Length: 118
Image (cartoon, rainbow, N blue to C red):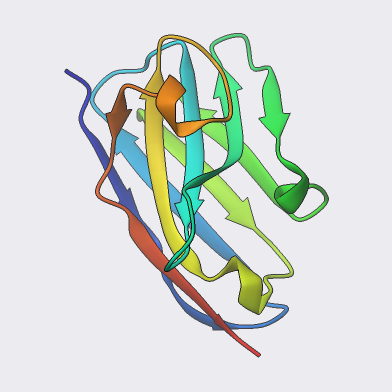
């Protein structure tokens, strides 16, 4: 069983930056970030596999980056130039396979809220 705990969410203004952290008990092959806005489906943001290969969804390209610190078992999502449409609950997840769809992932954190005001 993989245990994941996100932190770092908050309220910011458009154009500002935020870094989310996710402490995990152990790593699976793929570690990823997803988000879910009210009334919308959960969607993939970015993922990274054990070889360091990164997949980035269009919503994150040019603004977000993902990294993993294996020494501290921490996954990060660095978000820059945030927009109001980035407002969502952000989830850290772990999977035995990679794929930017929620059904591919086996373990989830409880989420951390990000709110971006205009």
